Amino acid sequence: EAQVTQNPRYLITVTGKKLTVTCSQNMNHEYMSWYRQDPGLGLRQIYYSMNVEVTDKGDVPEGYKVSRKEKRNFPLILESPSPNQTSLYFCASSTRQGSREQYFGPGTRLTVT
Amino acid sequence: QQQVKQSPQSLIVQKGGISIINCAYENTAFDYFPWYQQFPGKGPALLIAIRPDVSEKKEGRFTISFNKSAKQFSLHIMDSQPGDSATYFCAAAYAGGTSYGKLTFGQGTILTVHP
Image (tube, rainbow over all chains, first blue to last red; front, side, top):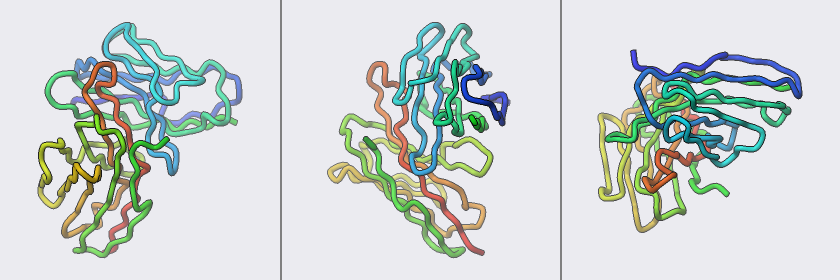
């Protein structure tokens, strides 16, 4: 089954404790990105990757890091989480040819206290 | 700066009625306008999309109307069903360079269809 998976689905942590949210896709997609969803703001792009070893900032990159060492994986790293990073996070992937449909993962709900 | 503005924030419709959600955009470089549907606890999923060279696209009960001169587009759900109750997001994107694939989303509309 073609899918984007994220782990963990739920995470409660404390300010300053480094964490990583993993994202993996099995569709051989070149393009991957991370979004955060906040009430009244929709989804906003954090970082994206056009292909392996190619990453760039989206609209709200502050406080986040990413890496793309393999085509299928695109982890999101919060080196020192703060309460304003409490949000619902989605990973998405798409191909660069043909359809521009983006496939979203199930989401990770993060709470930083 | 919100480049895609969506309204209303919430919408309540009776079963069988028509649901209408509107979006307006600012960037004339946008060339792809999808609508995503999100159920509670799930990620958004593509519902229907349109490019600016057509004024309307219909797929089943879902229709996108596009007005390029007004920089507006809307989603119409005909014969709305309780199973359509979800959050709907409009979005816009353009294919150029490093912006490929980036979706700029509207704020979302929570649709509730009463039986």
